[in-house]
Image (tube, rainbow, N blue to C red; front, side, top):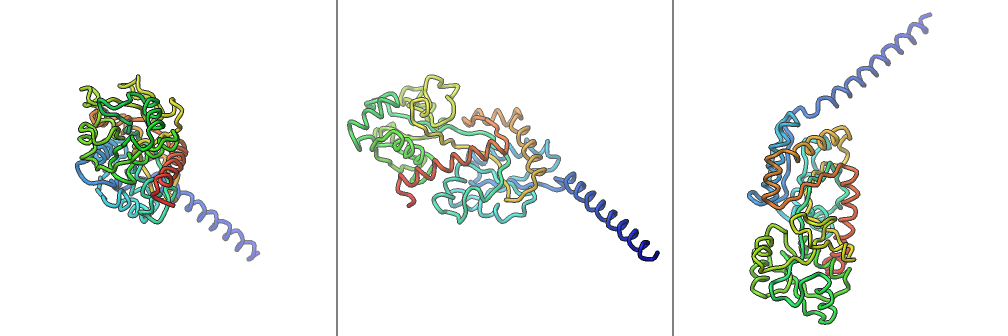
Length: 323
């Protein structure tokens, strides 16, 4: 009889503890977020990445119900921020405003891990980085440039923001796919436009907002976009892929978190940032900065990142940046 009572009591206690455990888990899920969320920005204050990140944080605060606090962590091409993010608890209270840098710094070796060392929440959008030729160049279309380069190996000079930059890798990847021999010239972000307009180089790879005024003035011509789809403003300019060169490398921006972050937290953050990307103030700033809002959820973004990583790795090998 005593054994039977002991067994019943034990079962009741176990059931109660199990219920408390389940209730506690439910409470924990419902509690997120119970404090402010930090948005780590991998570049310095005042730049496009910073302005867009802060605008997204402001818009997201309303939907999250807690402040989203932007904190700049510049350095090593984004590596400083990613190194900090990877060491944060996987609870969703620290999120990274990641960019194409997540596949450049990890492939070139600025950090001791790969892009898949994180979980990804969503992509917000991208800025296009077209190839643009100077006025007076011996070609005005992508195919004409390829033909000219094949007939004149090493004659075409393509400027970029710096060795290993996204603009450099776009040009390298394109040259590999097109089978052409060109000279890649690292000019720095400030020198690339003057160098193109002054005739130091024939072509540059550059974020669209920087070259657009010179296209409008007739001092430069757009050759092609390394994007999934054509730009609405320049709908007559083809994508690389449309011309037969399978290169899609975009200056994207999205949200990442520490590996192992609970799925319900990722879903909550994704919903919040999707709503934030629809905020009129954020849309207005995106338009002014040439940023195309093109939201991707977690699964789609992770597939996209795998493709971007492979393209960047291939371009780095072709450019002699890694073995």
